[in-house]
Amino acid sequence: MMIGRMLVGLILVGMGCTKEVNRCQRDADCANPGYPFCDANGEYPSSAGVAGVCTVVPANCPVERCGCDPNAATCTGDQLTVCNQDGRSTTETPCDLGCAADAPRCATFTPSNNLKGALEMAAFADDVELGSVAFEDDGTVSDLDHQSALLAVTTILVPQNTGAPIRVFIAHSFKIHSAAAYPASGGFGVSPIALVAVGPIVIDGVFDAGDPAGRQLNTAGLGSQNSTAACAGLGGGYGGSGGGNATKGGDGASYDLIGTPTPAVAGGPAQADGFEPLVGGCPGGDYDGQSGAAHGGSAIQFVSATSIQITATGRLSVGGQGGSDKGGGGSGGTLVFQSPLVDIAGLVAANGGSGGACSMFGNNGPISSEAAPAVGGCGLTHSGAGGTATALPGSGSSPINGPAGGGGAVGRVLIESADGSHGAGTISAKVIARPLERN
Image (cartoon, rainbow, N blue to C red):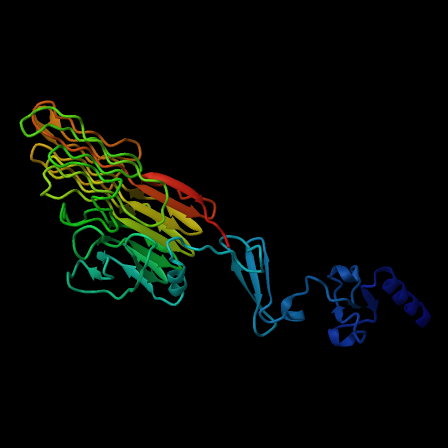
C-alpha cells in the first residue's frame, strides 16, 4: 500500500510538475520548497481538483494568504491595485482615464494654461461649498448676502505666455449654489479666472460672469480683450460694430453727423479656435469715443481631476455686454472645461450683447439660449441682436434716423473629457469637444 501511494505521488508530480500528494492541511505541512502551497480543498488549478496536496503557489492566490510586495502595483483595464505596507492587503482605485502606458499607474492629464501646479496644490486644499458669492480677479471671494464677509479660498496668480495672468481659486472640491464673477476694479486687461480641484466641481445654481449686477459699461468681463484687439468692433463717429469671437460681430449702421449715408462699419472678425492663452470676448465699437465700448464676456477655466457637473438647475454665463447708445455689443466670452467626466445637464451660455440705438443701450447676453434683443424704434432705426449658438449677430439698421450698433458675436467653449462627451444640456456657444490628452 505504501508503494502504491508513492507511485501515485510520483505520477502526479511527473504529469504537471505543479503538485505532490502528502495529505497537507496547511502550508506548514508542505516541506518541499518547490510546492509550498497546501490546496486543502482542491480548489486551485495547480492541484487539478485533488484535495490535500502541496502545489506551486497559484497565480490567483488571495493576497491575504500569500501576501504581496509592499507598494507593488498592477494596473489592468481601468483599475489600479497597490499592495499595502502590511504585505497582506491591497488598495484598489478606479482609473478614470484608464491605465498609463509607461508604468502600472492610472493615466493622468496636464491642464492647459500652466495650471498643473494648481491641480497638484488642490490635493492639500479644503473642500469648499459656496452660495451667493462673488469671485474677483484680486483673489477676493465675498459673501454677497452679507456684503462685507470675505471667505477663505486658496488662490494664486498664474502667468500666461501672453496676456493677463490667471487668477486661480483652488479647493479639494467645489460646490457652488450661486455666484457672480467680476473684476475688483473696472476697465480692460483684468485677469481671467480658473477654478481648480482634485475632487468634483458642481454648479447647481446660477453662476453669472456676464454682468451680474447691471454694471453695464462700467466693468469689464474677466479676461476680456481691449479695443486694440484684432477682434474688437469699430466705431468713432459712426454706428459701432459688434465684437467678434466665434463668428464676426454684427456690422454697425452708419450715418455721418449731417445724416449722409456712409458704408456700414464691419463687425470685429472671428477669433481663432485656440484656447491658450485664456482670453475672453471682444468689445464692441464705440460711437462717440466717450461713452465707453461694451465689454466682451469673461474667460473662465474649470479643471478637476474627478468631474465637472452643471446640474439640471445649474446655469453658467459669460455673456457680452450690450452696446452703448449707437455702439456695438460685446461678444460672448470663453469657457474651458477639463476633467475625466464633464456632465452638463443645465445651461452654459456665452451669448453676445446687442447693439445700442436711438439713445438706448443694448441688452446684455442673456443666461439662456435666446439672443440679446435688438433695441431702437425711432423710425426704422434699430440695433443688431446679439449672437447665439444658432444665430449670427445682427447688424444695425438705420435708413433715416442716425447710427445703430451691431450685435456682439457668440463666444466659445472647449470641453475636454475622457471621451469628449459632455452631457445633454444646452450650450449656447461654439463648442469644441475632444478627449483629454493622457499622460
